Image (cartoon, rainbow over all chains, first blue to last red; front, side, top):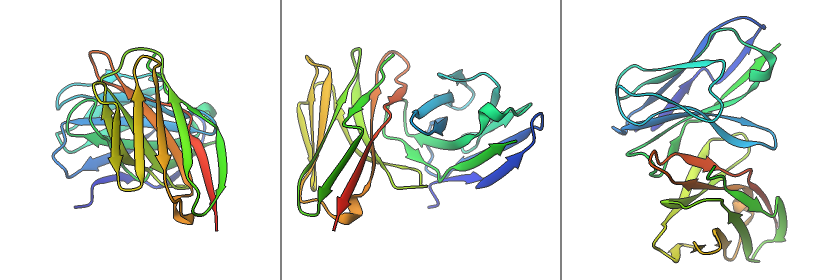
Length: 112
Length: 111
């Protein structure tokens, strides 16, 4: 089992460019999450999907969109990247909402 | 907000010593979880304690929960250099069970 995989691992964007971060899990989990981690800020929830077919905003959703493509995959899209979105992005999944979460290795994004 | 807040922000100890980290949260919870993050890596789940539990053990880890004080502690016994990492608490509560993470405690275990 690969667990939770994320692509790409690193990305540099110019302000205004768009990109999609991909996440997939092979544990048959129902719930999936996107977080960002900034120095001194801990993890902040961007969007989550409690189950296939549903998505909800987290703490910091502005500037992002998500798609729960199927039970395995949950993507995060930046439509017009801004320097404030420079961060490390983590995808996670859990069997059910509120359960232990399994994290991917992260995507380090820099917006110049 | 269910936010967990860890204390201290940083802790440096010698190998073999015990390490204690504390977490406080603001409102009622369903469960509280502890995670570890090695530098540059994703978080790894350590232990989950439910709101009706007071203490839980897993190997060298001991977690306590005091819902009256809205606080939890993580004790790592007989620490090793490999325990060097950041440790986060995360509170799950409300109807949507979202996890809210604290800012973490950076633990350094010196050989």
